[in-house]
Image 1 (cartoon, rainbow, N blue to C red):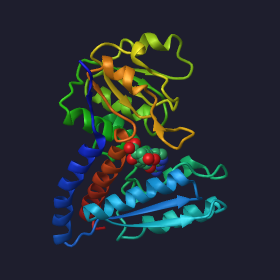
Image 2 (image 1 turned 180 degrees about the vertical axis):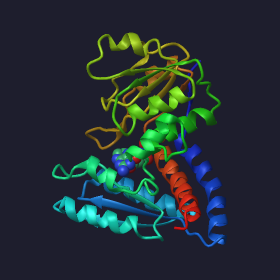
Image 3 (image 1 turned 90 degrees about the vertical axis):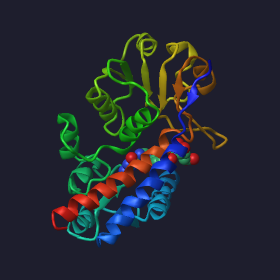
Length: 286
Ligand SMILES: Nc1nc2c(c(=O)[nH]1)N[C@@H](CN(C=O)c1ccc(C(=O)N[C@@H](CCC(=O)O)C(=O)O)cc1)CN2
């Protein structure tokens, strides 16, 4: 039987509608959740993601603004702006769109954002809390993936989850979140030998390697759950994932498409984190 498609666009939309109620409630209490996004340079993909964040915020009743800085901005100037936003009471969430130009130390920038306003969930304090299972801002893409699995009632406990990729923003954290849900987790990466032996043993396969169509039906187990995090742009401008959708869908039980799979969930979970930040900071008197 062909796989069920996990529609991240539809699910994201449904969750955003539910969030509208939460935001209305906060506004009635005098708290207007506010997200500030900083974008450096003019990478077209980054611009389009930032636009998506702005639109989705407005749709949910979250106020937002975008600070555009030229690619030539100094690291010092960027850090100074973040410091100002850390001290601005009306700003609940701060997000610096990645990637940054080469002359800027990305990790330093991430660490300069207050952990209370780190709605991307990239700050080491939030990463550490996520690892220990404490309350934290979760990185949006991994958070979106776990939300998808829960929403489709896909069992995780006891399953073999194989994560392809070890980036700080997707691979490493999604493995941790799956472990927290009692999956047995294997990380694979560019140096993994006999990679397809692992992919074929996965009950849940997370493909986050950035190689178009690297995984196809022959590389997966019957009845597996396939989560495709790859966003690869083809020459004609269209998008393709790390998974060859049609051959994988013949064998899988569930599969996410690209587009309309994981991507829209990333933005949805950012909104959820911004609401959380607004609630948390208001309790701290901010
Ligand atoms: N500060 C951050 N930078 C980046 C993050 C992040 O979470 N925080 N993630 C990615 C980019 N990203 C969000 O910023 C993102 C990527 C893709 C989508 C999305 O909805 N994709 C659509 C397709 C859109 C298109 O046509 O290009 C989909 O998959 O359906 C949303 C957000 C790197 N940087």
